[in-house]
Image (tube, rainbow, N blue to C red):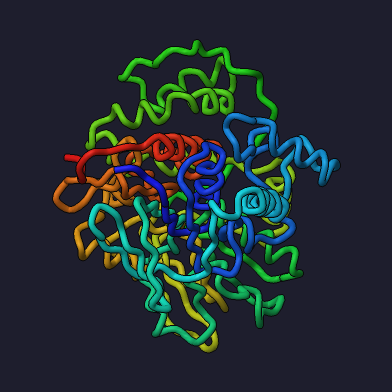
Length: 449
């Protein structure tokens, strides 16, 4: 079977970059299906505030792995004052949109953009049929799922319908979280990671003078970037017994913890792949939160603003377990147990914002397409229930453990197989590899076993 046409479902960063890479590989023509009215940017680069900066320096944010300075050169032309630092996410969205527009103009017959929601996917002979929400269908030889990060789960203890209207924001980017607030109000942010940082900056920039309380089990927040020396680690595989944090601790005294974490980048996927299921589960249960705040850092100027808000008493980050939220006038009274204590804290808040992180458990998703694919047995959760089960070649694994080489998934929802697949440097490698494979694809027969 020869691949002549690829349908890409999801036009955010992963999906758009996949389409661009197919063209750059002189591969099959592609149809990019995106339900939002803007492609390429995704939520991360379209719903951001001007104060929201990239978490990686511009020098490592090229969308093209074979041109590592591509974004830096683009910045030099478009925004020279931003070159070399941490560019605004909205500017990076402009960069991605321009890449996609350039690809479409260069080869309009090879790349089509369809604004619609894909609601079903079925086999059609040796190919596939994508059904759209308006009833149209698109036939394709191969399909790539690029759903991006799914909205966060509703935290335990929260019953949205039981709370006053406007009290609970289930998705931090779906509503105006500052609407109707006064300087005497308190906000509870559930989660203390990168999304919490975004929310705090957004509220601060909007002039909110009230108090923000951010709650998570461990109360850990992202660390700041700083200049580090180049890695001195030899380019050779690490011993299998070395875990991510064990290595970082061993090297931290020698090169500093930032360099110790950064130098693991070439090895992280291999270490994850070599770990057995029990080791992965223990990492997620006990160490993931520590790894995330050291690995996924924030720009120094952002860290300074967060620290200033904490010093002024406008932001408090606490460790504890949410018990419940009950109606209290126009807001809610939140009860939580501080970490390491037996007493319960009552916290009156005007609004609760869910920043608990993207959901990964397919069995809890409300996405219509993913639900139908689960029902059909075409996809299944990975063993850790943090995404879609895929092979090392990004092929989706079905309920019967079989896979089709022509049904693939990309991006953060493949973290169960690749782990480090949430940042631009990781996704650009994945999309490049998939594009190269599909551009040279020729299979005899159907599914792989």
